[in-house]
Length: 567
Image 1: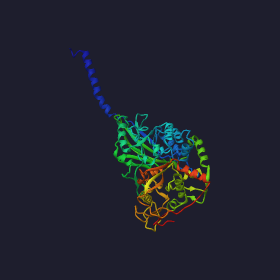
Image 2: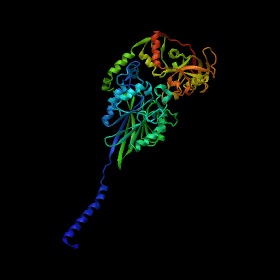
Image 3: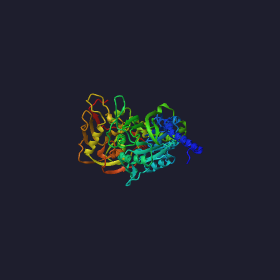
Image 4: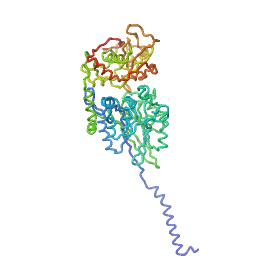
């Protein structure tokens, strides 16, 4: 081989040239600044809409800054900024408003109005709330079947199996390849409140354990890049001196956002609900938590900045804000969409029922809760007559309730008894009754006898719980708020003045929520059920007034509150 031959010289020169080019290429490539892929992910969330679409107060048809029609305007504004923004809901959706009641109880044939509007707004998924079950399995399944998006609840199982009732999660594939995982969860306290016949086919397991099972599946099997938990449950917290939200770890199992954030790795954001509070952006263990209040008063908007590195999406920044319905007008397309539903609802609400002779209105909620009033006595009387029980209790559920005027319509009744409760007669001891009264008495702050009476902050924050203060008929009792909790029932007798026997059994009638121990009334949980009245209390009230035509407002002064300055 003659390496000096011109042909070989040319070949060697070419080899050296190629080697030089190949050797220099990695250096040039390493120094070239190739920008990484970035994206902005936006997730919108509603919760506790409770059937409210119209921006109205149905008790008087006054304008109100809530409802899905206003949320629709906010959703459109967010999508103008980010057309690929996702939209989720955290439950308690199909029950609550008069429109929802009319659809469920009077004419359930058309598509559920909430599903109609949510389909139009292109919701991506919804977590199931506890109130979804209130109208029974038939209404539940009909609404779920009408939704063009999945209803999620990973901790709701078919009874006796490990099979999830609906679906546990949804994986949403974004245009750039990002995979968004949405896990649905429902407060496990549903059996404490719900009529057993509505959920007899279901069981509810611990949400933390369910999340620990499904988040790794979403990560490993489904290759989810980010995990959002849509949870019908809230963040236990207290309010700081400047109104700030301070998370607390205490939980009885009803609201477990804190536990999810601290015990389940891999969660990026929790979209909370159930507690009816506005939480813009709170962090626990690095997890972003947001909750949009109730009835469509706010829209939670989460913005998440991500960067792709070596084929993996990494969260660089996340933040959330609450957009207020008060700042926008309702969407005219949504108003047009539900026009026929609204017309039927208003006609139904304006139907006359009967008359009240005397005063059954609520002018001051605190007065109603510290004095034996005709309205509360009347509701207890209806419950006792319908059930045959000699002792009854009920509550003034909200500070917004106005009571029954002299000319009563369906609007007045549904605005007074706002929940679809039925009744149960249970057998309890005298001690159980006393313990329940002591529980109710914690509604008041301890008083020195001269200050005005005040509500215990635990019943107002973080969520108003006025519905957990009961007033009784069929017994006589006195609450002394100057005494420590647990020692406030200073008189407890039957109507003849004889002390209640702590060991004797009595039949009492309660709504199904309270009869199951709801609201911290554990003394009632598991008690023998003597009989049930499977007619909603609002319907019992309606039937009673219609049958009597005119109802006399009466009080018998069977209970009182002392130990404070009470007007």
